[in-house]
Amino acid sequence: MAALDPTNHGQGQAGQADNGFADPGQGPGHFDNLEFILDVPLEISVELGRTRMVINDLLKLSQGSVIELTKLAGESLDILANQRLIARGEVVVSNEKYGIRLTEIISPVERVERLR
Image (cartoon, rainbow, N blue to C red; front, side, top):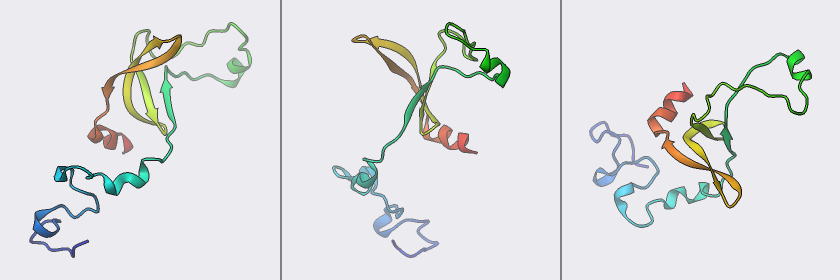
C-alpha cells in the first residue's frame, strides 16, 4: 500500500484507489484479490414470517395446529445470508420443488444501514 498522502485523497500511484482491491475498471481478472473468499460457505435461508408466543402456547401445539405469522398472504419472502437480509422474493414451484424468484435485491447501502 502507498503511504498516506493528503494530496492524493487515498489514491495510490497514478490516481488508482489504494484499498487493497483491484479497481473494477481494470478489465478481466479484476476480482483476483477476492478469489480467496469465493469458497466461503454462507447459510442461505428464506423467511416466510415470524411470530411470538409464550411457552404455554408452544406446549399446546399439536399436529394440525396453525401458527399465524406476521406476514400477509402474497407478501414477499425475506432471503437471508448468514441471518442478514440480502433480497426479497416470491415462492415458485419448479419440477415439484419449491424455489424462490428474486424480486428485489437489497442495495449495499441499505444493507450497511441495517447493521446500525
